[in-house]
Image (cartoon, rainbow, N blue to C red; front, side, top):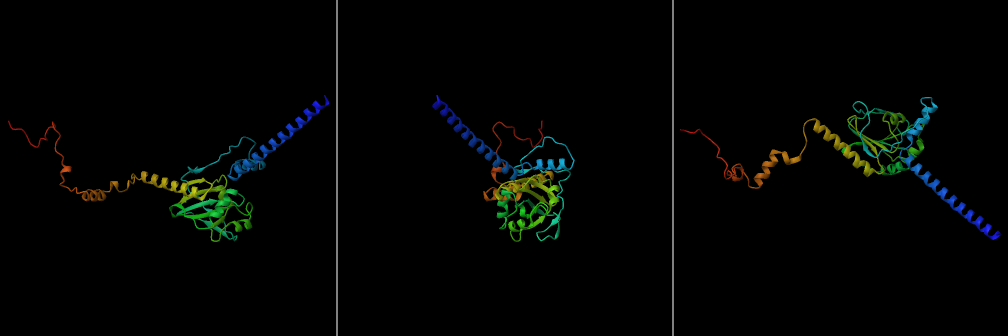
Length: 264
């Protein structure tokens, strides 16, 4: 009887140990998932909600958490005008950026693991779709370490430190990219590699140009509708203005065209 009881106790202990390892594994996996989501910008609305509650701006309640992937339609009011960016450069000098022409705004932080790939990518020159300029926008000294920025940024990389710009552009998290064309936001979104960002922003630029062409009543079909090109192709094929194929004979049974009047 004593041996049986001892066996049962040992079995229970083994089961408890196995369950403990299982629970620890699940907790660790859950923590890794939460960290990854935070790096992608998820949960930023929760942080804003907490700040609002502390400031007395609102009570507790459900907060939507959204992950945006790829280029999304700019959710901005009015004519989607790109706000002016006011901040400082890496040296601390005041800087104001008026966004004329084409500029790709890259909102990055030094504490984001995904951003680390972009900091590394930007150590060499990159081709911005449409021949635009690249401008990295970071947060100010109250949220970002100047020494960490100096370490992450490549020499010559165009950077402006501006916490207010993140609010003006309603940035949900980092990394996040906003394409500005002549003062208008035409594309925005996030991705994990520069190749993805480049492709997505090129698509946004192409879509914007297509919308503008349609609005003007013109759709570019290439050389297919160019009369000069069509004539050149016909002549190259030996088809001129008097070629018989341009005046096919009438079909059998078809009435001949009446070129005159009947005389009785």
